[in-house]
Length: 268
Image 1 (spheres, rainbow, N blue to C red):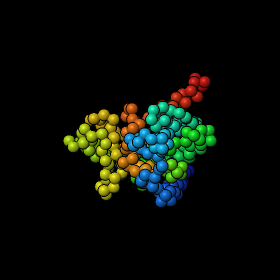
Image 2: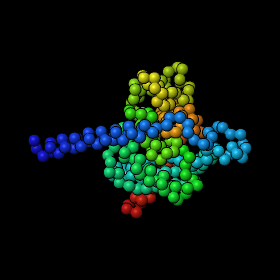
Image 3: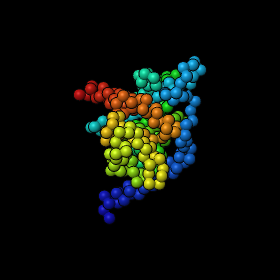
Image 4: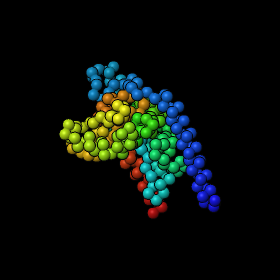
């Protein structure tokens, strides 16, 4: 065995052990997952107009995203933005430019991204506690995940905040794949529907494909993260959409990229 082969086998062994540890952590956190509504505020479509009800309305929605340098994919800007739920205007934002030490491994995105996002939520709590989000929209999946515990679930359990996963790409799970979802979108009974339930072969309701305009074949994928039901998640995401992607994650994406560009300008 040459040195290169020995190194590769050692790396593969370490990688297997790391994944096993991550799966144990996911299983432990998953035991705390709540897949139904557990919050004190009312949904955007609900309201009596009374002062008492106004105090209970959903006021602040957070959005998370992480953007990467093209020249150096390990360097990233993480963003948490907070939007007014009525106007969808950004009322607060926090950024952190980091070098991510954990590589991207499908199914384990949370171990790469959750720590830095949790740090930003703590910054919001310190710098602007009155704007701390009552709900988080996460650029990534929740229940729609090979082990039913994506980034939105992971972040929601650790931060103890209601979360919704909003993915642009589909995780292949329980018989659901890109071609199957395309078939659902193109079917006669669904062609004009805005929301299409994603039910796996097991009968599990993993989430919903939502398209911003009739006939579109580029939906976003909504799934429960933590402390919210799928029905409530769909109502909230719909209320936040001006374009294909809901404003909380869209603004987090736009602003994290802009923050990185500002940092690059002095070097150019």
